[in-house]
Image 1 (cartoon, rainbow, N blue to C red):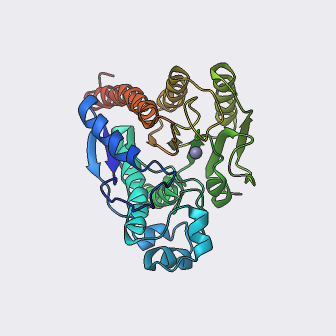
Image 2 (image 1 turned 30 degrees about the vertical axis):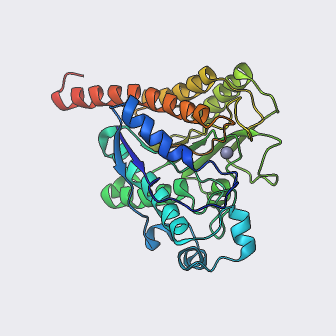
Image 3 (image 1 turned 90 degrees about the horizontal axis):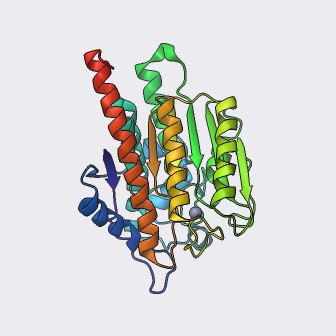
Length: 319
Ligand SMILES: [Zn+2]
């Protein structure tokens, strides 16, 4: 299974900054050591033209040239630097490349970062510069239209299980019938002004495994009734975990693994390609955040193997 990274573009942060930048390198290190079925690839940067499928030219230029206002940088939460701009492009590029892999018959692929769902068309927010899921959706829709003109527009379900609401994504795709945005998030958590998704599920502070998985089940049933996707983008946020500093929920490792399995199984049962990205994770213990992510990859490898067996069976007519 292919997974794309850009953590070697190190974003210089002031000392004491609360963003756990080290988690990306640590995830790559552990994947290489523990899950050899994951093929780690360097992400390419998204181009201006790709970003412009979602973002305004003025915003792309301000990020590229370093002319973001102080207020805009404060809202993003990172000071501007050339590495910050490059890293933001590569993080989008990683989801795009993973999306192409998944759609090209591999069934599943991943971005070791990404899930930057607080980014709007014309501004960044909450550690998110560009919206990787949104750019990937628009670009793959365009590529799909070119290759399969008669098949109609590619329909994409964005299943956002980061603990924070996917406000930027919801806003970008508002009134767009070709994209279904689902966000399951903490009711009292950031962002405090939420945008309406196609389906929003709000969870109370302290929510545990049983309540969480039950809410997910009902959300997936509703998604199933309302939408028939040709691709799924899954934001497998680690921040609902009970050890998270910002999450406010109490989901265990097992609960999050069951969550990942439910989403990946749903896509697999329908033979819908799925790309996943890591989104948020702010563990008091960084290693706990990375463990949640490692578990996501382990489940994904199982479904990737099923896809390969199924595709192999189709090729030889023995399925
Ligand atoms: Zn989050």
